[in-house]
Length: 357
Image 1 (tube, one colour):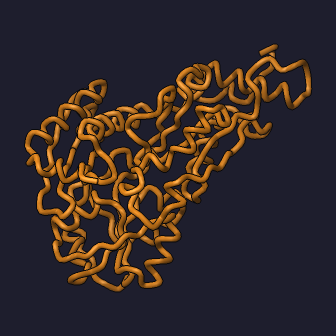
Image 2 (spheres, one colour; image 1 turned 60 degrees about the vertical axis):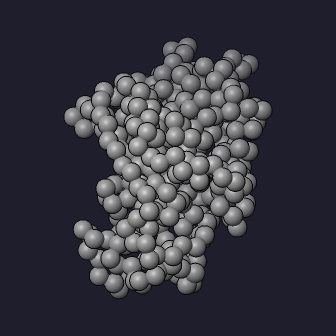
Image 3 (tube, one colour; image 1 turned 30 degrees about the vertical axis):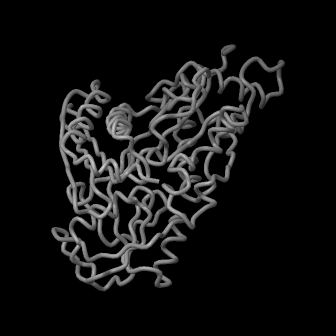
């Protein structure tokens, strides 16, 4: 470091050696000193172009630069917005056009090709099997994992113990998630569902315009956008089990890029890594896709990882929920074991229906 004292030296958490090297290169560039000695800057951070995705990406960069403000001040990182097929096509369910991997396909193509260095994702939108050569290098601290109900008529009385009662008979729910639809129909088979996709503001605008009576969104996204005041009902996990990875931001990089993987280790949240590993193992073992009503929610309580899994039929007539617990270091095994139990106790026709084109 040539004796240079950088701003992160007194930080309560020491940065990785890789972070120090990037910081040193940023300082070198700012002084236009000797020829480049490290990685070429700026490092390019790929993201979807939606408002929520950009907020998440900027939060990631804020977290990364907390250890070393010079990284921010010297422009060590560059935001790189990428349009994805999942965002462009909002007239069809994701299951009909290729699944949730469509939110990452173009981003990961750019990562493989070297046009970007990192890719930031909502973990619930990231496929369980990444393209060859890419790894999930970092998971950030989980926001609230719960689902939220937003009503068009905000004058109705809401009983937190019976939240579904706030919906009128035959209410039309704007929804694109078979997981949410199945759980709501299991409790309220009278409800009707219509496709509602788009970013958060688009969905709320359509709701306000009368396209439906209510819609559902992840509470985490609304909080990150500063729109929590729009929430009418927050479903507890026993009322609606969240999606695997919901509320967690994940960062993918090239597997061979050991320096960036080391850099990201400075901001990895161990609890988020453990719970997401369990949830994604559950999803992978059940062949989860956008046409599969599967929920997975893990948490760590007093050092014990507790995982709840759910599988249902799309019409909600069948719904099975099971629990497992164990050591956080056994997260992957717990997810796989619970998935096996759910599969064993689920009628075979449920899986057959899921695989139909």
